[in-house]
Structure formats: structure tokens, C-alpha cells
Amino acid sequence: MIENNQEVIADGPTPIFQKAVGFVVETRRLGNRRKVNTAQIGTDADRTMIHVSKSILDSKELKRVEQLDGELRRYLADRCLPSNFKSGVYLLPIALVEEVDAEFTRMKEVREEAVDGFLAVYEQQRDEAEQRLGSLFSADDYPSADNVRASFGLESSYVTFDTPASLKAIKADIFAREREKADAKWKDALEECRKLLRATMAELVGHIQERLTPDENGKQKSFHASMLDKLDTFMTTFAARNIADDAELTGLVKEAKLVMSGVDAKTLRKEESIRDAFKEQVGGLKAKLDAMVIDRPARAFATGTEE
Image 1 (cartoon, rainbow, N blue to C red):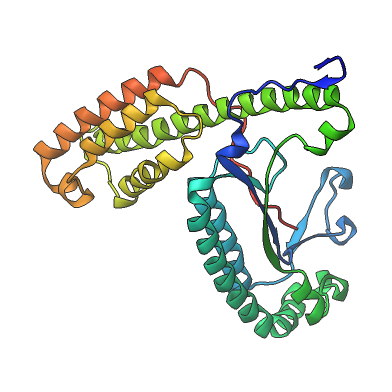
Image 2: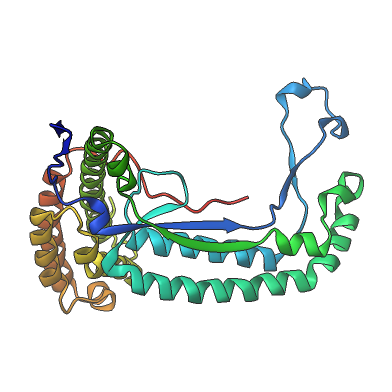
């Protein structure tokens, strides 16, 4: 507000941009699906009801690039939070910036090697596709090797979110209005972060509990170490991701660490007494988490853009 043309800007709550930054990821690669002209499909059906597509390449090398993109999305989902922005914008806790930046750089190098591997066989696979697709082959579906290379990309950048300070120099009431809007937006974002972390832990613990519970015939279900690993990753990164300062969930994470201490999948599969005791403890955690998860977060993790 303005009093006697003097700026009076009240300090608000600690904004989210002091705890996290925007991590923008752009992922591009050659698309492998094309529409098929329905006139080429022999049928007596109404062609407006038919939607057909084809793969233009049968390429394990291209699938490898797709696999790496999926691994990157899952890695970021384990360490970032909902951004409430467009797809491809992650909310990255400042405490994890160094780790994520280093891993992104490593994964980018691995991806570039995979892209090179695909480009080395692209023209051969295009010729093979011509033989296999027959009348459905169209040379227009296959860009030149140079254009294919240009269609791949993996880039990142960092952005911070705040009310532009330059507004203060223009007009204080505009700055105050925009700061108030930003504070409300970040308050909502923090609440979404709190909900998401609670729901994520509840899902991880619930899955462990379900796999520890025998089926209707009393037979033990398969139990993989990856389930414990996922919960361990969540607990390891929780302190950095807990930008909403959720004290209640912090207490449950500490409790879960004690429950998980010294437990491994092999022992749980072989030692019935340990498995039963662990299941009971996990059930207690799940009950507490269910009580905390009143409603699910409205927005899931953002994912990288693809073309």
C-alpha cells in the first residue's frame, strides 16, 4: 500500500522460491508414430470411425533413447515436487540442486551416446521399414539424417519465482498487489507439496503392506527389494523435499526409518517371524498415513515435454 506516496511493503511468509527453484527440462526426440490414410485400409466400416497409425521404424536403438527419457522422468519425480506450472517445469529443492544437476549432466551424456547409436543405424532401418511397410511406406515420414539429429535434444535451465523487483520502482501498489497474489499462489503450492509427500509415502508403505499380505489361498506373494529401495529413496530425500515443513510427516519418516533398519527383502522372504513382525509395524505406519492423507494432491508431478 502507499501512505503519503511512500512505499510500505509488508513482509509476507517465507516464499517458496527461497526453498526451491524451477528446473525446466526440455526433452525432444524423433517421433515413431504416423497416421495411416484410412483409404489404404480395406474395410466396409465408416472411415470416420477409424483411426490407424503405424510405426515408421523398428529400432531398439530409438527405444533405448525413450527408455532413458523415462528413467530421467522417474529420477526427477523422486527428487522434485509439483511446480503448478506447465509440463516440463519441476520444483527442485535447493538442497538437491547440486545432486540433480550432476545426475542430469551424466544422464544427458548417456543419452547423447544412445542418440549417436540410433543415428548410426537410422538409414539402414529406414530401408528395412520400406520393405516391411510395403504400400504404407512413405518417404515423407523419414527426414534426412541431419534433420533427424536436430530432432533430438535434452536441455535444462533454472528459473526463480518472485514478484519482479522492478515493479517497486514503477508503482508500489502494483508491486504489493502482485506480491499478495504470488504469496497466495505459493501457499497453495506448499500445500500441494505437503499433500503429495504424504500421499507418496502412504502409497509406498501401502504397497509393501500389500505384498506382505498372503493371497486368499494363504500363499505368500513375491516381494522385491525394489519396494524397500523406493521407500528408502523417499526417506533419504525427504528432508530436502519437505519445503512445507511438515512436522507430522517428519515424525512418521523417522519412525519408518527405525522400522526399516536392518530389514532386507531376502530376510522377509525366508524368515516368517521377522516378516510377520515387520508387516505389523508397516500396518501401523499405514494406518497413521491414511489418517493424514485426507485428500490427494490435485496435481501430479510435471513430466518432460516430448515432440
